Image (cartoon, rainbow, N blue to C red; front, side, top):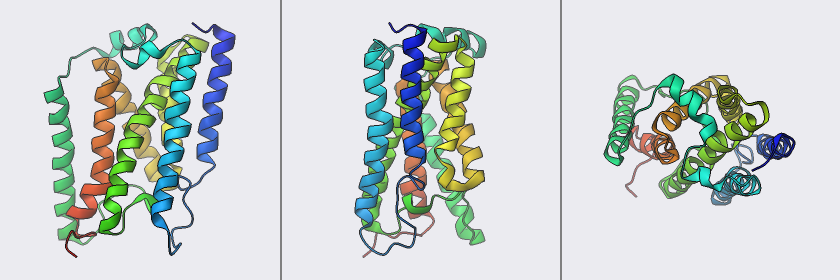
Length: 240
């Protein structure tokens, strides 16, 4: 297990990976009006998320000797769990929560159709599919972001901060703020919204002691934004 000095070094490397991602602007995409080659932009965004958040998390957890945290919640997080309370959530319960997200998408889509307004917080910009052919890329990006961002923001960063300063609550708050900052391309409304979502995902993770629950919910949220809503609001049609 890494000591405080080694943990601080690993945390610095994790923050360097985050800073490199944040420098990419709209998740590393070219300008919104760029005319051709959008599939490669989706590929680039997915690759950056996978490398800078997913691969870096696995690497740094391995160096710290904490791969066990992938399947068992670290004991450092127990004080937070004791404070917020614990509950068990079965696979069925997780799917029900996902269903609630889908139901919210249906309600939002209906409201958007009736009011002729885009019912959306923040600017999704280049990551939002604009044609039927891009829906698959939106699904791929949702899956990669759901897995890799949860590894980074709900496990790696809180764990390393806790290993350095010994206060897990600060670790989770730091990670939630970074999660919001990672979505700065969505504007201030998007930053605030994603920070709150990050806090809720952290709660789901700690309360259930299951990273899989947080990953599943994250994937549902992203699929809602990048696949379901464009379809349900009529922005993209499955018809040729």
